[in-house]
Amino acid sequence: MDQPRARGIEREIPLGKTIALTSGADGSFLTADSGGAALINVAATNAVTKDAQFKVVDLGKGQVALQAANGKFVSPIRRSPY
Image (cartoon, rainbow, N blue to C red):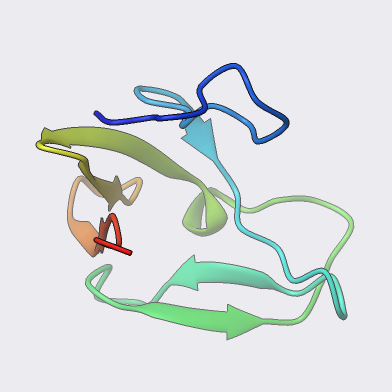
């Protein structure tokens, strides 16, 4: 994992932790679809559902993936070369 400013104002990548992704605009959540292989947007609720929780998995070489509660990987996130 390459974090050139790991102690800067940005947050560190939460490797191995469970996260939820929310919209700053309307508070909606990204959740795994019924098959667990894709991400979909759902309206905000008072509680974070299990489908809206993802484990951040280190793939090495600056790459991470999001693992859904059912164990499927839903969206590899690659570090931009820029």
